[in-house]
Length: 327
Image 1 (tube, rainbow, N blue to C red):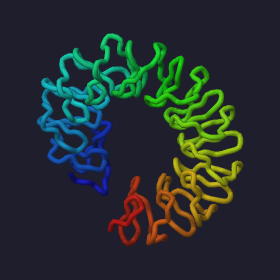
Image 2 (image 1 turned 90 degrees about the vertical axis):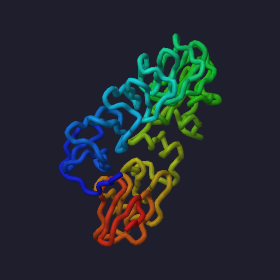
Image 3 (image 1 turned 180 degrees about the vertical axis):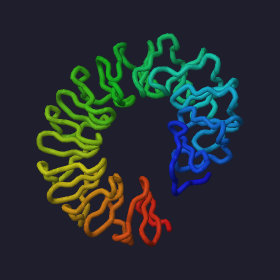
Image 4 (image 1 turned 90 degrees about the horizontal axis):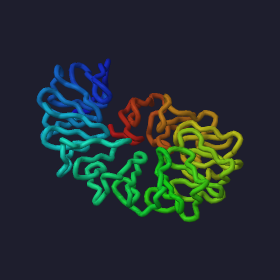
C-alpha cells in the first residue's frame, strides 16, 4: 500500500477513485498498486476493476472474477460464482437470485434473507419488509440488523433512526425504553435525540430535567437546547452562558467566558482569539496555543503551524497526526 502525502490535479474516475500523476488512487490518498490505468473503472461502493482484477478500496480481491462482476449496491457485489459483501464472500448465497432490498444492507435470494454477510435465521421471506436502514419485520418478529425481537403487529420504525415503536413499546435498537409513550414519541434528529410528551431521550436514555416542549437540536446534531440549558451528546454543558453560546464545529463551542470541547471547558483557552484552523473540525488555536480535540499540543511551533487534510498538520520541525508529533 502506498500512501500519497502530496497530490495534484486529480482526475475523477468516479466516487472513490482518481487518476493522479498517471496512477490510480483510492480516496485521493492511497495508490492502487498494479491497477491498469487504461481499463480501470470505479464501479461503486469502494470497488474498482480493470481488465484483469477487482479492487476493494486499494487492495486487489483475487477471488472475484473481473469479467463477470456486477455491483449490486451498499457493499454487495457478485460474479458468476458467488456473492460478496465488503469483498468477503457470503457462504451459500445464490448469485442468480440475489437482490438488495430497500435502503440497502438487507438482501435476499431464493433461500434466505441477509444483513451484510449474516443469514437471518428463520426469517419469513414472503412477509419480510425493510422499514429503514436498520429495521425490518416479518409476520413473526421485528429485526434490528440481523437480531430479531418480539414486537406487536403494528411495529414500525421511525425514519432514518435507531428508534422504532409498536402500540405497546418504544425501542432503541432492540431494547424497549422504560416508560416511553408510543403515541407521542417522535424523533428529533436522525440518530440520537427523540422525545415524547414527558421526556427527552438521547440514544434511548432519558435526559434528566430536559424539557420536551422547548427542546430543539442545534448544529451538527451533537448540540441541543431547551428553554434554559445547552446539551452536548445528551449531557448538560455545565456553567455555560446560555445567551452568548455559539457553536464552532461538531465538538468546539464557546461563550463569552469559556471555550468548550464537547461538554467540558478547555482550561486556559483564550475566548476572544480562539478559532478553528482553516475550518478544520479538530485543530484550533488561540493567541497562546494550538489544540487538537480540545487538548493543547505540547511542543508545536506556533508561528509555523499549519493543517493539511483532516488529521495531519505540520510545523517547521516536522509532521503531526491527530495532534501527536510523528516526525
